[in-house]
Length: 224
Picture (tube, rainbow, N blue to C red):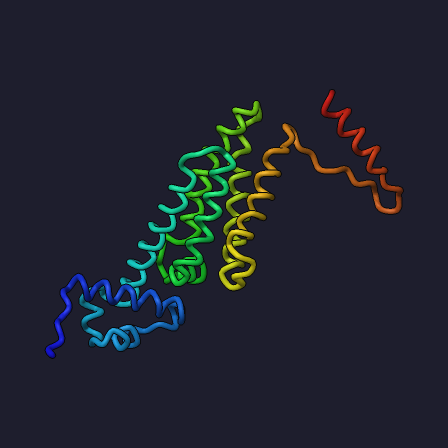
């Protein structure tokens, strides 16, 4: 049987797929045009013809992964009650790690020389979106919306770092991980103080203030 030749579009998609797997496995520096061509069963000039080299192929893959992950996160956070949005965005992040592992590895572990768009850029975009909806939530509860960007950084960083940890562990299940993350996020937000302060600590060598005394002090300050 005569083997049907791929169209230009099909070949391009094949090279992207093979490049994605190879970059995830070996990293940018450890990947060569020769290996990508060999895995695809083509000559090196074919890779150069479509992408101009491994940098071009890598840039296309990064752009695709950025768009896919950003779309998943933004869709999750778009609508719903506050708790529902947090649950959906955490699950969206972990689902991406689970289903698009190679893409996530490339985003978080590698960056080609001169590559401007990366995981940090994506996270900044997510932070701004989270800050927007947190600001509205704060205003709804009569809280100052100005620190919303700070809380958005903290929440996004927590989810992002946990997702990277789970990338290797895969235990417990993503549902359990998501439930614990949401537990911390939501209960932290629902019990927010209007003007949080650090707990005063006595100088070394002096007796610490009993917990019930600290509580009374805090209550008096809030009532002042």
